[in-house]
Image (cartoon, rainbow, N blue to C red; front, side, top):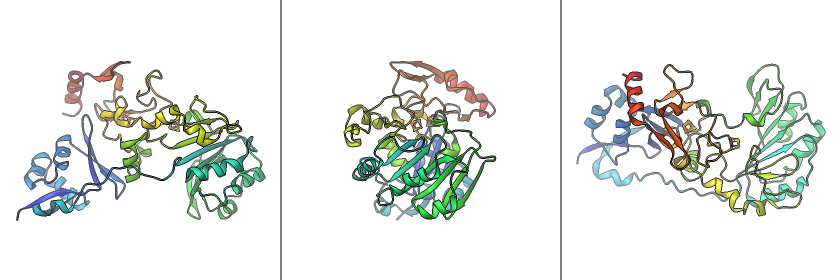
Length: 359
Ligand code: SF4
Ligand code: SF4
């Protein structure tokens, strides 16, 4: 029997325009590699020589030591099936964002019942103004017997006694405090507490694309392959009770005071946006980070095109440079946009830029 190498099923080689990435879904890490090595790692099995020819001995050792590839007998290959990429979760709505100024303007008890019946597991509660602490406790108490698994609280500093609130409401997994003197991150009883010096909750800050925000996990990878990586099974209710896909969306699907969440999400337009995957989005479809990156559908470069690239992306996948790095130029200088065809890269221009940049 002959020995060959194989990529672990949880390590997914993803090609981009100029370079590729191995998504290590088990260790939640990623590794940058060349496109030619990526093509080798995508094969069912490959030889020692194929790795050396497309990388070098040092990279090969790194791939073995970091549990990316392993040696096996060629006859044993069928014993290592690929990872299933079928997306299946029981929740009709996975996450919900609730905005408040102070006391709710709608029947919160009814909302909790509706979220439970939709199978919602993650909740973000945002206080856009400075509420009274009794109001916060009253709102949190409504979820005491709910199926919600984790609550993220966004609130102004100096409203709550953090230790006691975390103890009283163990569903709170993170708290983001605005209006703090200094930025910091700490953990209180396994709850992460992030202090920011923002002076208010600025919804327009959502949708930033930074490498620090990438999430290289199996759940995110499979969701991004099949659905929109931000809005799939998400629902939001703003301070006035308006139902939306997310708080920054301008399209309303009724008001919770007279429309049920179940009714709102049955609206075709509500779910259409869930179907926009990164593989459909201009520029992102050529980016090696597309299955670990959030896909903002609100702040986009061309609001007339549903599949336009996120506006706040600071990465150019055609030259593999982030804004601020030497040689960075915006995506717009690498091709042309049209409403019909979306973004078309100018291959000759990009090839000559890359020859200079990466020689
Ligand atoms: S679609 Fe954009 S604005 Fe809305 S929640 Fe996602 S990242 Fe934020
Ligand atoms: S090009 Fe798209 S996938 Fe790549 S980093 Fe930017 S927003 Fe994310």
